[in-house]
Each structure stands twice: as C-alpha cells, then as structure tokens.
Image 1 (tube, one colour):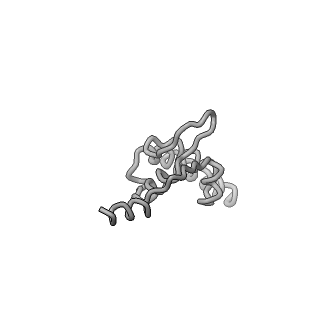
Image 2: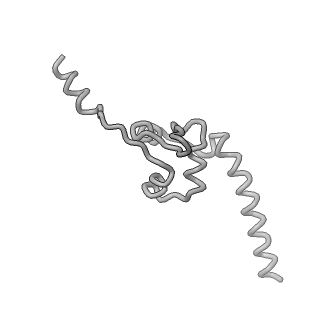
Image 3: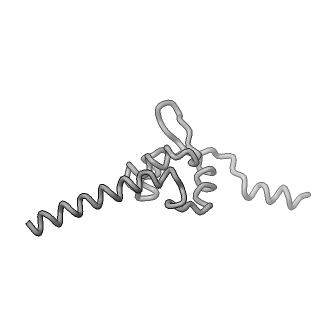
Length: 100
C-alpha cells in the first residue's frame, strides 16, 4: 500500500499549468498558423478561457506522447491538399517567370 502512495506522489502534480498559442509557438518553434490549426483540431485537448485558447500541461504531454500522422488525419489532410496545389501553382508561376 505504501509503495502505491509513493508511486502516485511521483507522477501526480498538484500544479495546474495552462499554455496559450503564443507559449506553444515559443516552445515548439512552430508558426502561428500551424499552432492555431493545432488548437482548432477536434482531437487536440484545448479549451477556451474567455477569448484565449489554452491547453493544460498534462493534456499537452499526453497528446504529444501518442503518434499522430498528418496524412492519416482528415483534419490535416484538407489543408495539405489545398497547400499542395497552391504550392504547385506558385512553382509553375515561378518556372514561367524564369523561362519567360
């Protein structure tokens, strides 16, 4: 019984910490659009605190402890397809300008 109590004390924190979009941008070194999209992902454990989107530290750790594959998730595929074709259009325009 005593070992169970010690185990719980080691892994349970009484401190509740929340991170904002700006905090995650600094921690992950990701752009604002990407972090905003992450916070809007239905599978991401974010909450609204007034007008500010936040994620609790333990929920964030739990989310990132599991593998997430961008190409397997419909939410991320939608923008990927749009970005892919937009990127292709920009490359074609650039080629036309260079070949002129």
